[in-house]
Length: 138
Image 1 (cartoon, rainbow, N blue to C red):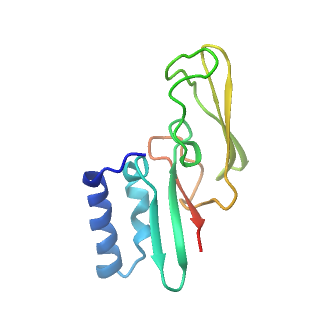
Image 2: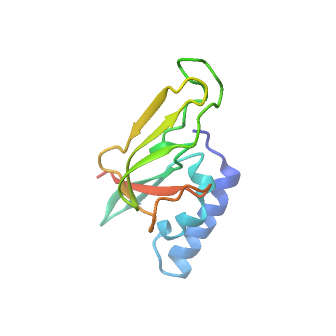
């Protein structure tokens, strides 16, 4: 992941406004900041709630927060992944994401890590906005 201060700046400003002006938690504005998630995870530390990590997931680009491989390990094709297959336990909950190389058919399977709970509401978002997941750290 590549930390990009110019992108994070907007999230920090919106999170501060949510916290100090509107009385909301900083993570209330995550849905509007998927670009931040493409580059870094968000950590929130609170005295009573402990530490939380928010991970942005996009089924084709960052399945469960892990960058999709740029190259197929079998045929060495670059960015050859077709549309991802999402294995779901319900319309809103993904169990794993499978990427398949369009050149050789090789599959890369990414399982949802234990402790990840979907933070964004509704069905799994397969558009560029993706979904946010939360993991309790402490």
